[in-house]
Image 1 (cartoon, rainbow, N blue to C red):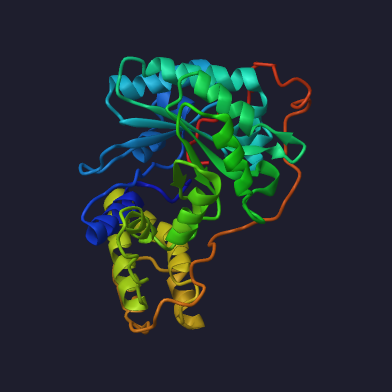
Image 2: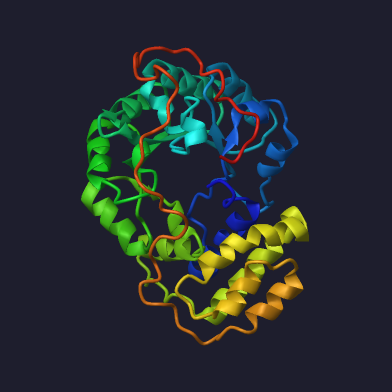
Length: 361
């Protein structure tokens, strides 16, 4: 997720899973980078592709609208040993992306979508780097694309597909329609189908797999402020007892470690500014008090963070109902699209304004 799944957060999630289950079975994907920015070696993008020495496999999430640029970026991953896995993201519903024909808008253009997937697979041919593809149900309820997208990705050599069971017009509002995951699983039969949407605890993951028959789950917003979710998932999938959720003292320890890792990656000033949004997610439902919360929202140093966290009730239990969604849910809205975008699903013209230089959504 943009601005979240950097090397610091991924390291934290892996550490918590390892501490609980003694192994790391999850695949932790870096935040989205654009193919063009990667191929042109944009410094910020290259920094976003950092992986820790212990991280294996290294999973790089790629956004693209152009087959040629996709090939260049994927070939760079191969030639320079940048990652062990490429995940193509066609699920972003953000208006600034879809209005230019990118993200969740792009699978509507079936031929262009296929050419992009084909380019990534071709660049990784004769390597052990798999290419997976993530997308949404479609643009809106009148324009579903997931069954075609799944079949195209399967035909072009993708190793797996993942479906966020919402349309772009839903954004993150309402409820994910898991029945669409089941439909995709029935439609795509030769590669794994993964499900995404409304998994906020381990029991949600089990329920999704039982209801849809999907081969695995993809976690997004469910881990915001809950990086221990992957430890819970590891436990349930390995037949172990799901650990008790942490109390506030344990959460503050996790927050301190998160800040430490962010400082290593960004330096203290940017790290603590980045940490502020995580603090709000971590403290969701916990008793903290308005004054402390306001001070934490402006925290600037690790020392200041430590002082403020010490003011919290370390014995406070994890709140009832604390596993709900964090972050902005938004509300359904008409999807911003380029003029005439829906006229011809077979048009394979590359959207001229969508291949932006910056990465991260």
